[in-house]
Length: 429
Image (tube, rainbow, N blue to C red):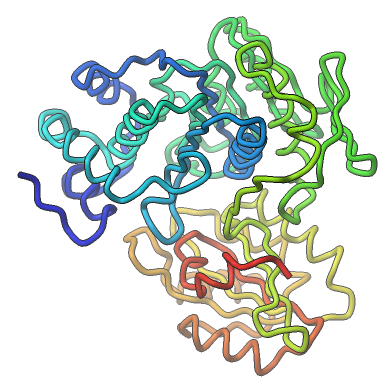
C-alpha cells in the first residue's frame, strides 16, 4: 500500500527521486509507455502545443472551442499555479485529487524501475486519466523545448509552435535558431503543423518543416486574424471569432492558432461556426495578462502576468504603453536565477516608477532579492526596494498609488501564486 505525503506535488517529487531536476530525453518516457502499455498513438486526436510564450492560452482557447462544440476535452498544462490538480482539466474542471492519487499509485512500480522525472510522471498520470475517462480530444502542452520533451512521446494529429524567443537557454541553446529547432521537434512527417510568429518567423522552424516534409501553415502567410472585424480567415474559409479572453495584443495570435487547428482537424472533430463565434464555456487562466481592481475603483489597477522572458516582457510593456498615460506604475517582481533577468526587465524600465523585489520560495532556482535588485540598480531603475514580502509590497502600493495608477505583478509562477487566490479567480474588473 502506497502512503501519500500531504500534497500531490510532493508525491510526484518523491516518485521522481531526489533531487527533482530537469532531464531532457525521450528514452525513459518511451520505456515507461511500454511498461504501462500506453500507446504512443492515443485513440483520440492529439494536439501538441509548444513554443516560448502563448502555450497556455492557446490550449485554453482550443479547450473552450471544443467544449462549446460538445466534445469532452482533456487539457494538460504546466506548471500549476496553486494546486497540482490544475495541470489536467477534464471537461473544463481540474481532475480530482483522488484520480491523480489513483494513477500515481499505479505508476509507482514503474517509477521505481525507470528513473522518471517529475514532469514525466505527471504526464504519464495525466494521459492515463484521459484514457480512463474517454475524452474526445487530448490537448498536450509541451513542458520544455519540444524535441526531447515528455509529451513528444505521443503522436500528434496537429502540432502548434506559438512563438520562438530566448528562454531556457541552458537546455535549448543560446540563440533563437537553436531554440527554434528544438521547438520544431514536435513536428511529424505529413502531419499538419501551425506556427504563430507572423512578424519575425524563425528560419530554423521553417527549415525543420521542409526537412521533415511537414505541411506547415504560418500565421500571416496562410491564415490571418482581423481584430477590428473579429474575423479569422484561412484555408479558403472565414469565421467570426470572439475577442480574446486576456488583454495582451499577442492573444489575437494565440486565438488565430486555435481556430486554425480546429479547421485542420475538421474531418476528425467537426466544429460548427456557431461554437467559435462567442464564449459560452470560456476557461479561466489565472496570471495571464489579467487586469484586476482588488481595492475597488478608488484603488490602483492590478496587472498580473507570469511573464518571465524578454518576449513576454515586451508584450507587457506594450500593454502599459497603451494604458499608462500620466498614471504611476509600481512593479512587484520575482524571478528564477536561470532566467535572463536583465533582458526581461529592460523593456519595462521606462514604464515602471518604483520596483519591489520579492523573494521566491519553494524552488532552489530562485534568484536572491539582492541579485535581482542589483540587476535593476545596474540598469538605473528608479526606487528599488528589496527583501519585502508580498503583503508589505501590496500594502505599500495600496498606500502610495491612487485610482487610475497601476501595480504590475510579474516574473514567475512562483511569485504570482503569492497573491490572494480570490483576486485572480474572480470576475475581471
